[in-house]
Length: 54
Image (tube, rainbow, N blue to C red; front, side):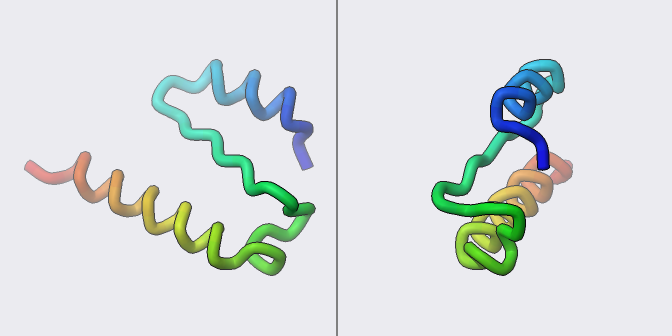
């Protein structure tokens, strides 16, 4: 697991990246917070779809 401080640094170095922090979640977000993960994944897929339209 990457410390939040390093995650923020990496995020700042990657143009167009998105950093999402899930509160009160440990090492297994899909198991601990499945609704939050599903929401974030749907948002990512929707952004990709919008960006790929002609």
